[in-house]
Length: 350
Ligand code: GYE
Image 1 (cartoon, helix red, strand yellow):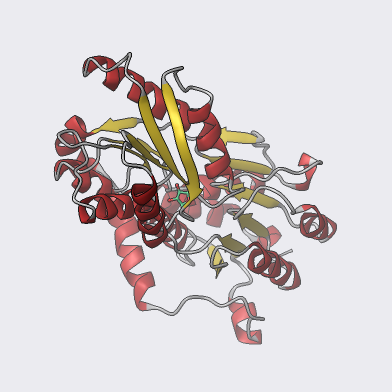
Image 2 (cartoon, protein in one colour; image 1 turned 30 degrees about the vertical axis):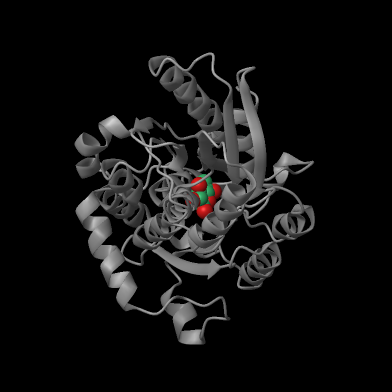
């Protein structure tokens, strides 16, 4: 296996560059360089290419797609971390939000005998067969971002990502507190939810976390998927506004759907945000969400950190060194209400 040829010296060098890679400037430079080059396809590498990558750790990343700002930041995090300079060859595949494309990509990684497979699974279920194939080929599978729901968890090495149930609970706790501050704690509150891709662990967790924290006087009028995209979020919100004239709160399971919902609300002649008619609760806390909060459109965004590239690299380095890693690793995340946005926006990396 190629990874066995990596010398101790190279490991030290990689660890140093990996640490440097965590710095903002370095990753931005790398991202700019990357943008100028063509995306790596999941085809068989040419013979010369294979020879040149002999000393590199080959990582296949089965990415969900490019549906949101969060996803773009996540892709950039991988591309700027898994560089040749840092000792890696990255084979990147964009599944366009389709599980069957991800399964094809994983099979192609197995065929190419990559050293590690990384998957951000579109949905939670339906992975056993392809993971078994990876296991038989002796290739470790690392899950990042969304989780898988598999009967045998030895089919993957570990997972790192956000705690989606907690994010949903945090959103509900923020709303409870906000309504108390507004003197509306005892009012009937009508809520609609724009859900993420149904069956994605980010959707399942956020829906469950918020739903299980609802107060008795909160009514969930409707829940529909906006597929984590701005355009679908806008479309679903337009139909909610036609159906319900008394919406108090929109829970958008990511920022991009919230942006679409805000556009729909304004187009319908209504207002939203801290001084408006409708409260907007969102998830991810990407830079554009801070801009939306500063503009007075969004009330709160619950953070979900997409910068998993360096985290996955650290896992791989630990495994390379013969170490063990925790099965489940949650990333720390915060809640950013509108009143904090102006102070915090300058510190956001994505
Ligand atoms: O919230 C959304 C993206 O899985 C946490 O996927 C991720 C979600 C994120 O499309 O913006």
